[in-house]
Image (cartoon, rainbow, N blue to C red):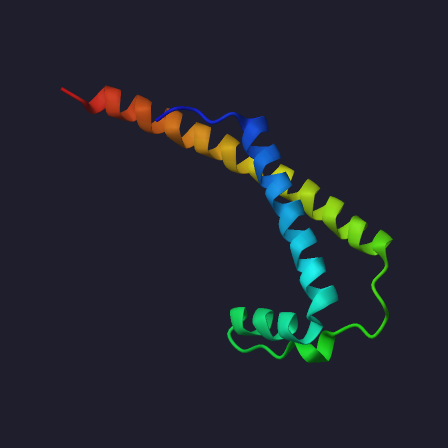
Length: 100
């Protein structure tokens, strides 16, 4: 198993998370009811209408969420790749010690 680039995985997951957040914001702006229904179905039938905001969404708030989720994705990717590299190194070393 090859080692993963910690920063590359972090950036990839951060950008993917930010893009997903932008698409979600767009879906909520265009199809608010259908988007809530879709995410309710993903959450095994949870009724999300009770938590729906009545205040209009501002571009600043959307940007705040996109950037925030991008940073969380970056950190999650860094943690994931770091753990993967530790596990991969441990597995490689244990295989070489026990192989004939």
